[in-house]
Image (cartoon, rainbow, N blue to C red; front, side, top):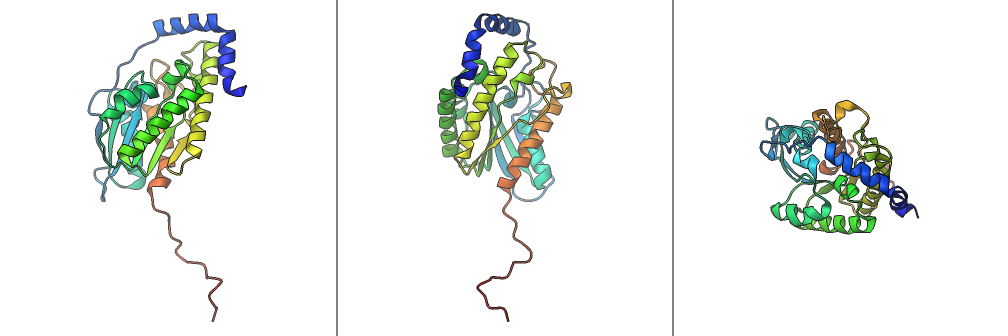
Length: 261
């Protein structure tokens, strides 16, 4: 029953939700995708071999809300990783405004070069939420995307960014905001279950205060430059542990099987 709670609630409010959804789409401020190169090198002054990352996703990977890709999640994640690892990070962002996971399989995945990438970020969920994708279809599409990314890129780690908490977006009126929040949480719970079944996939909750206007662009829907920076720091903190080799203790404990002289 809990799995279908968003659908049950939406059904009871359907006429109101249709009206609110149409009005929101009509009056919403539409921002363009980011300009400039969708790839680059962060931390070029650091030494060592570059870490490679690929970001794949919807409008946030396309950079809606900022003017250049360096300020969007792909560039910001690279900058955060370079700062923490003290190594250069080569990055590429492959995103499209309005893309669902199904769209990504058809339109974005074919653009990914078939070569090794150290870390891959997948950032989806908003458009699958607004399209009210069923949990079963969402899991099926995401599983197919994960398999294809693993086949093409053989990454050490895949970061699954949590579905944004749409119940906190001020641009959405009530009760539409409440219902979208329920749906987003149900899709995010499915992401957590997918990640828990794999050693190379890590779910990273989007634990940001979305009520803070400084983190949102002027449309009240997409991240601002500060929002992308804060989000990138969360993702980098989670990904670093997978990119760094385990530390060897400086003083090894005595082997209990060895005789002490």
